[in-house]
Length: 264
Image 1 (cartoon, rainbow, N blue to C red):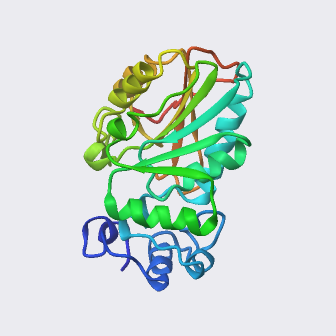
Image 2: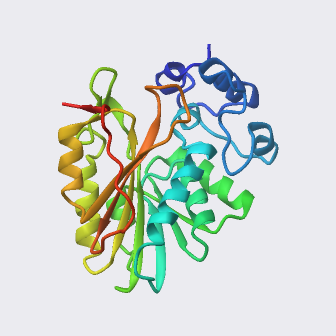
């Protein structure tokens, strides 16, 4: 069976999947052969264009339905901000780059920058972006050093999609502990706040349906405004969402809580 465990920790983790394996994963895990739909394309369509993914990328990538929903919420939130002179959208853990693709679709005129540490993932994603002619810059290396030369005028908005590897941060009993991602999300947010001290910021942090409440409180304390969105795209208990957080401005959007889904 091509399930999540096989592709994350088995022999297929760092292997390039063929189309049959991609579709088998979707069928075995979600009863949907087209589950790994990325860049607006079904598996057979992106595979036919020469796009390839590793086993772990098939599991970890933000598929179209979720990435589209995230892009829409980010765009709605940005619409409540003072109009910036420009927008830079970054993903410090780009993976397939699919979330950046959807964010830019919903943010016309924004510039996209992806960072990827893993050499193999970087090479495959760079090839995919070139194949599709997507206007996304991709840098290779740890997110801090890869951003060393990145500057932004003070009147530009920084939007950051933050989805670092979860590793053992996700527990079946207590949910997602945002302090145990690799690296911890508070470290990433603090770095961005310090690196761009004049820029208004909007962070979209990928979260799980159940989140450790203490870790959520520690992270939201960094922001001037925050809200949570959970997307009911999978079966109950297996849904993802985002924490939206602003710095140096306050959104007029509504706040949604995680009532009944927080772990103490």
